[in-house]
Length: 314
Image (cartoon, rainbow, N blue to C red; front, side, top):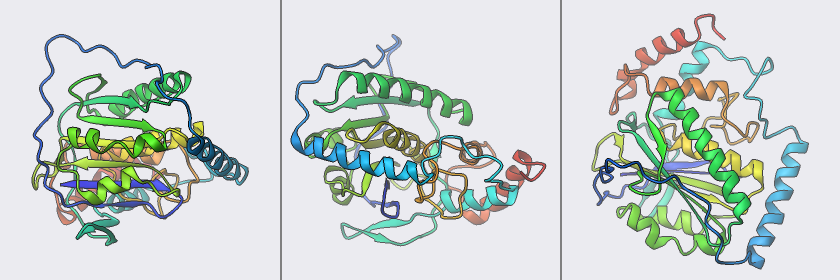
């Protein structure tokens, strides 16, 4: 089973691609520590399509920032939230999908789902398109490495960056390179549905990045995730994709217009993970919640954890 999440200007897509996962678990690592990911010298120049897209997204980022959007402060006195808000937002984001795959088409559904999350350590690999400049690769590698460590600290889920035997693959690609990703995606996750594949290879201009979470069979735990990010985005927009898609790949798959301060909201007010988001991730990986729980089973536990995390209400 595949869960899809895409982020951009249009309402955020997330749902079930309903494809059986043909591959098994990631291969067990060897005893020797793997070499760290490193910068690879580009083998292609930036083409005219990519340069045009870069200018387009720079203008979008500039407009958003001029309008007070894409905040990086994580929320403050102007964005209070209560334990009830935390529980309500967690339920909306963890127990509902916004889109589903029906006969190869992504259809709005909002259907209730069981709780999904990881039960094994993350092994995160990052691959860059042939035209991504070395300075951008170095910056993205450093940012993703620090963010993965932060998410591990928040959730308690062990995580490391690797260059082989990955179970969470991040592809940072410019337009021509994304369109050539079919074989790479299928080699990592053979069960990827055609609808999910098309959404990654041919991103609409209003989609900036996407992530797929794969569960073997009908299970409720992830054994791999795949994120595809537009390399042509300006730095803050790309950082926003890094923050949202990796966190989505951990199990917070939906968005909610009521979530504030949060990156799980399609209004782009916040670019980077917020305090509310951190608490939702902490809640998702609380051992009292189990993969496969229904909303009815989980609701009283969610409310209890929220009250513990925010004993004074805010």
